[in-house]
Structure formats: structure tokens, C-alpha cells
Length: 110
Image (cartoon, rainbow, N blue to C red):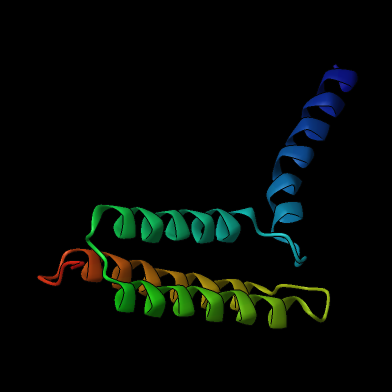
């Protein structure tokens, strides 16, 4: 009985501790990298399809480059805090909206 209780308590402790380990500050954030890659692909696709003209694509690429530079600056001290991640996600949300808006405006590549 004591052994079973000990095993259950150990499993519960590990289960509760796992999210805490994932939330520790570090420099890796696959969700940000995945979003950046996906947004770059959306820009490329927009250029190929003609939904984005050269000027729009250039501006969107600059916006993505600025986000990468901000990410590098945040990571330069060896950590990426929760607030910094939140700020990067906010910037990525805006960039995503900008990509959508530019792809769906009336301007077309000539």
C-alpha cells in the first residue's frame, strides 16, 4: 500500500513539474521559429501567385527581418523571458495580419 502511494505521488509530482520545466526561461522557442518560417513561406507564395507586388513583399520581408533582429537582441543575454516571448508573439501577430491584408488588397503584381 505504501509503495503504491509512493508511486502515485511520484507520478503526480513529475506530471505537475513538467510544465514548469518547459516554462523556464531559455533561448529556444520553437513556436516563434515555426511562425517566422511559416510567415516567410506565405510571403513567397504571395509573390509567386501575384497577390503581392515587389514593394509589398519588400516591406513585409523587412518587418520579418526586424522581428528576427529583436529576437536576437532578446536572446543576447542568454534568456528569452516570458515578457519577451509575449512581445515577439505580438509582433508576429501584427506581421501575420499585415501579410493577410497585403495579399487581399486590390493591388496586383504587374
